Length: 611
Ligand code: G6P
Image 1: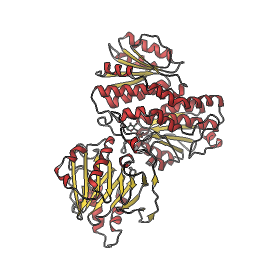
Image 2 (image 1 turned 90 degrees about the vertical axis):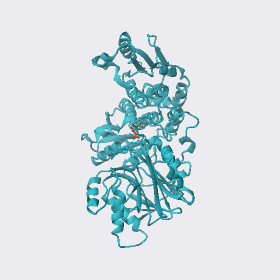
Image 3 (image 1 turned 45 degrees about the horizontal axis):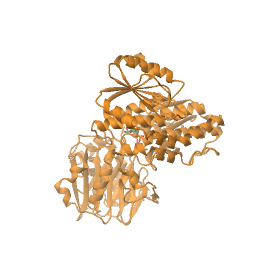
Image 4 (image 1 turned 120 degrees about the vertical axis):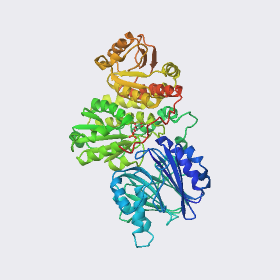
């Protein structure tokens, strides 16, 4: 997904912008560009390809301005090319714009501008923005200090869709204007300087103080000031907030890849997510939520809505919520939910899960649920992200920044937080306190058990070495183990490009068993003692047909499996947090054996801010 960086201050902007772009590379992109202002003139350098390609261009060496904007583009309208990459100019080269998001009505606006003799040189939706700003600027007869902002607000009022923008003007060479609407953007406050970025980690090494921009708020940034306005040009008072993320937590810390580092961070990210929410001698506490028994009794259905890995965490959440709260819970994929007229009303509680808090489909599903009167909770990892501004209640996983595209520590933190939320509900509803106490004890044991799982990885690595050339794999489980099979299968697809399928083990004989032949790898997950025997019978059926088996289990199994990875026993409701870890590593080692880019798999983006 596109990434935005900006700088205004006393230093040379170029190295800061390039460094910021490199840190945003994980979002996925296909071209990059940069613009700075020097001697009241805007200079733009851009290219298709990586940030390193941009850096090698001759012209970039001459950029010396102390004010600049930069962008990595993930193509939506028009192919990856120099012409389509950002920043985009208006025809007179007076305004330069970088944009994250999609302008849905760009064709209408292009027609409008073409009728006014504006010309277009790219296939993008973005190019209409600097030209529209130019149109309003040149038709404004007032020459006061807000003329630039006025033109920008007028142009933005015409835009439908999503946008985060940075805008330079040669008429106001000491300012950058920024705005956001359904697309992320933060401003970092320095000492006589301001930084801009799509997300916090990219500029965390420069500052820890951030202005969080809300939708339809505009910022005029100079080196010394950051002033904010609404779309009617009324001034808004905004205070910078201190973000307590360690900047080294956004770096690799000596690990070969972010994904590996994030897998190994899980004891800590889980501990942080549990925090002081669970203790054995008091009731569960969740900040920002104050539900009453009466309210929870009135809830007759819970929906959990999310995309990708977050949706898989939701599948685990469903099992826990139904088991300990007895409230029917459905899990849905956000892109389906938003278009299928779901049956929700004021008696429905909808929980949205999103690591980034910026996923377009999840946010749209949230808006829909609110419009139908449901109570909404957002579970996210990113403070101040878009989802938190829409939801009635927001709860944070404290997993720290997750950089690798394939989500690992965010998933386990989400599963833990859903279990904590279920306990919180059950305590208010005064349900079975013995069972709750046992579950609480198990939650508190998780960090040390995860550490234990992470100690024995040699067998996983060895098996990955044996099977990395395969084309297809299967993941089987029953009950909560099936939810893990789905997440494990997604991980493998994402980073190793091996086709894989997750199946409820009992469903195997209804079709997929036709695909089992000599040497196909079948991964079995066995953590629920009530269901293990049944899954073992299904695995026996694939062994008979020649499959290789790789088993993750906390049971004593003495069958004829090729490889068995033992994990510690835990309350079955929490077993996904332990059983997914060997499978995260399995995908990781396969990807490494294949020599692939683990952190930035092809075609994928970390934060999917378009539908
Ligand atoms: C993308 C990422 C996945 C992630 C999904 C949902 O597809 O590649 O790793 O699970 O988006 O992202 P979210 O930020 O909403 O959890």
